[in-house]
Amino acid sequence: MSFQSPVIVQTAKAAFPKAELAVPHVSGGQSDAADKKINETIRQTVQKLVNNQGSLDDPRAQMLGYYELKTNEKDYLSLSLFNYAYTGGAHGLTLQESLTFKQSTGQTYTLAQLFKPGSDYVKRISAIVSAQIQARAIDTLEPFKAIRPDQDYYVADRALVIYFQLYELAAYVFGFLYFPISVYELQDIINDEGPLGPMIVND
Image 1 (cartoon, rainbow, N blue to C red):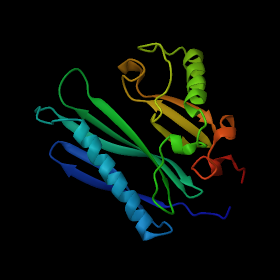
Image 2 (cartoon, rainbow, N blue to C red; image 1 turned 135 degrees about the vertical axis):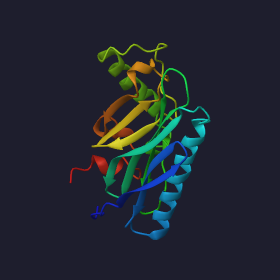
Image 3 (tube, one colour; image 1 turned 90 degrees about the horizontal axis):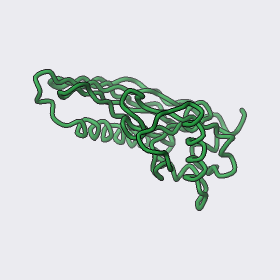
Image 4 (cartoon, rainbow, N blue to C red; image 1 turned 90 degrees about the vertical axis):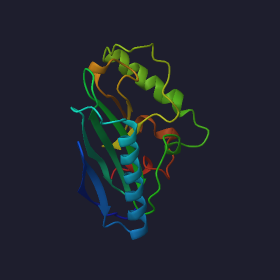
């Protein structure tokens, strides 16, 4: 596989009453069209997170948006977008949505697209997550059965990181719960044409 330069990720600031957002902006990729597609997907996702937080009518309300870069190599970009808002009540709420792109085309990937068609990735990943829940003694709200087929994830450090939103798996005090899974643990079902394929190669 030929070397792919990482894209340039800069921070764009957006502000409106009671809110300040730090939004990633991509440039320097293999095509301007792909960069534009990536940036538009990011913009739409940031807007969706803002909308999902609801009204900022409370006089004490505030909103902060930020992001974390997870992978920027081998023609793939994976990042997490966060939105914290206090809209009244005991505490604020943070939402997270992650996006994984092919840099050269701007394509995004669902969890299912990381794996070979027909592979029972839900069962495989659920078993690994279940074992980690037990090993880490996580007190779940309900007995854990399985991940959603479209469970939230990102790619980082040759690992697939499955995660759960606040309150989705456990009480608020646990925060976001992350379950890193080495790509080598899933190697036999990975779609070689997707984001995890290049991560298996030791180069």
